[in-house]
Image 1: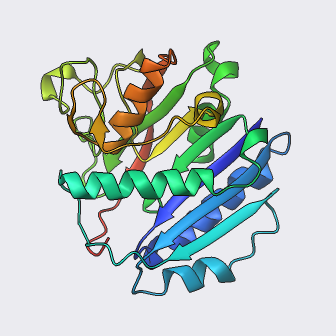
Image 2 (image 1 turned 180 degrees about the vertical axis):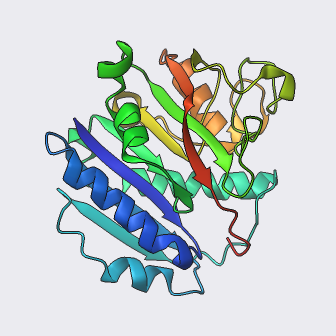
Length: 247
């Protein structure tokens, strides 16, 4: 497999040592895969870009690290239409700035403020071996790092079982194991690169509903519209998210 890991960064300095170490573990453990990295950093005030640029990335096949000043407003979560539009633009720039995208088989978005085991990464990246299905989008379940427990989903807005949902509902359950979903992200999302290489990406407006929506939901909607509808998660696989108060 030829996997492009993508991360967008803003004021994530306190998480970056773990983020770097986890990416290194993926790249050095999965020796039969080509692992590359694309980073798009903007507007950090905590030295994030300098820290990223100083790391040793020699274990990767290729990498691109870009920094820009957008003078964009700062959000700590929330459903602001401006926030999701900015996130979509940054995620798309992170993908499409990579010069060897034509050679990539999968794009793996990894948020800087999550932790995960190598086993979770293995099952997500090599899912066809473990589940016997070739998927278009596949994620674990994201949980709050400081609140363990079965009913503890973090990415509630981006996780939807059906087309009529706008957010996660407690009654949907969170222990279904490997199952099809309408939309998922969960801070660690693997995408087939085939539709992305056709120009399909993130967005801030749901193309089916015509309203502002969660940017990872929009890419799932865009995938579906183009016929890429094999979208799954496995709740037995988890990544732990730590809230960054200055993101």
